[in-house]
Length: 469
Image 1 (cartoon, rainbow, N blue to C red):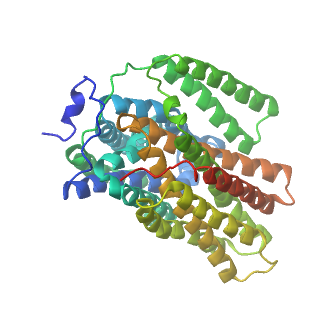
Image 2: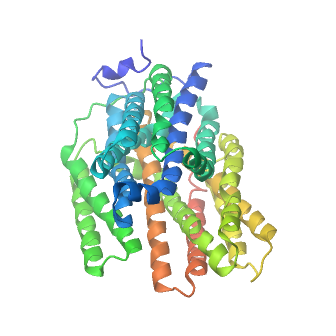
Image 3: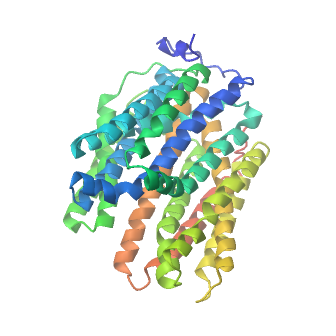
């Protein structure tokens, strides 16, 4: 019988804490299923960008249109994170996760076999639905896979996998495209996804459930408010006319207010407003948004800074970017172990302090720095970011009640997406408004957000944010 079979029962679970993690070797198999999906989504996000020019030529579409291969996928994820998190609390996180991974796999096959551009966009939307299901409950599942005293270590594996997959993405994508057409960027997902889905269905644990009717009105309001916000942020980068941008942001605000009023009136809201009333979760979510603004600003602006300002060629610039994600991967296991003993306020503030120091040193580089001068500064930034990320994610998940981990996981994923989208929009605004300073101005802006994130994180220090083991 499937490990997720209890999820078909619609009756609510009693409000008791579930068993403290899975025994070995089932814990290892469950972790493997999560790593498979994390790697697929992280690699796909970085590999596909390399193929966009070829895809535009094959489908005879403009570059501005081919971007929707990426944008449609990201937009669907942003819209469905919270509804999928709520669905996981109703029918079981494992069921949503395995179903999402299966849908992502089937859509990958359609993407590879599609004969037309509209069909490709449709398949990418379906892929986005599957990815939203996976991402919305991914962190939540770690709480039920690992014992409480090892939860930080488990979340550290997640962060390390994302960092390594993101680092390897461009290289893996280039290798695939050097020997095969772009369709293989999707086809490689199929056998891996099938195996991962089977493991997930058999190994993932049952999770507490709540009885909650589907909130169609809330889902529609999320789609309108988040969709208009993401389109507006993306429009800044495209330099859309200001009247259009103003209408998008104003419409987003109106629908957000409507959504808030709709959710406050409900006894079981889709948006985790109850969790955001908890200071530690609220502060951790705000810190996460600010930190991902920093990461997005730097990942986009630093290649321009290395090439246009400091005079390195494109290959050298790419190599100079590498220490950041590698140091994230190095820092997260250590932070994961320490987070099982020390609070997120202490570890997160220390990590963000290192990130802030690294950015300050990057901004103060001499006019003609040696590569080594840049490499160790980039590594310091990445180590600080990785040292912050795992304890912060654990704080969001571990402080939520067991039957609200879907909402907490959606907070963690949603804050990341909002921070990254906002950072990309800010880079575009800085490059457009201060073209003579562009990259350096963006680095100083990232430094300001790093200071803000450090201050917000420090507000948790006196709030006893360490969860009892």
